[in-house]
Amino acid sequence: DVKVTQSSRYLVKRTGEKVFLECVQDMDHENMFWYRQDPGLGLRLIYFSYDVKMKEKGDIPEGYSVSREKKERFSLILESASTNQTSMYLCASSGTGWGNTGELFFGEGSRLTVL
Amino acid sequence: GNSVTQMEGPVTLSEEAFLTINCTYTATGYPSLFWYVQYPGEGLQLLLKATKADDKGSNKGFEATYRKETTSFHLEKGSVQVSDSAVYFCALSERGAQKLVFGQGTRLTINP
Picture (cartoon, each protein chain N blue to C red):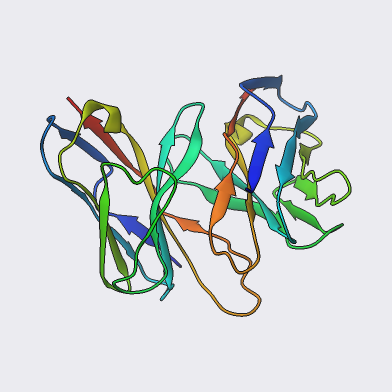
């Protein structure tokens, strides 16, 4: 059974703390993504990666960075957490190649609260 | 740029009612279209997809037809159940682009 695993389902952090959200996929997918989900705003893309050590900014990269040192792992980093980063964070992956339709496979999400 | 617009929620129906959730899109080229569902406390999972015009995606009693002439991909189900209560997202992917663009989501609640 294919799987995207996010390390923490629930986190509570204080303003100014550094936060790491980890994501691992076991499908040998090239592409990995971090989305943020907020009520009424749907899913917004923060960063994505097409390959190891590659990263591209999404629609809302400010205040975030990412790391992809291994193909299966994609980390989201909040250098100095702020209250407006309280949200649900969703990791996803997808494959490439001829015939690929762009379907994303999602993890269960990490709900971050910044106090 | 590419965009997806869904009907605003929340939507509340009684069990066995007919469901339609509207979705329209703007895209260049020939996108693939998706419906994802998010059950309470879970991540998103693919419900159905269509990759070219006039394709019909179907799963778990849900259907959606890729209508290029009206740039739409409306989700329908003939008889909803309480277990269908969830948030539904319409999305598109440009071929080769690898990224998905999502609508804002529609929360559906089914009452017994």
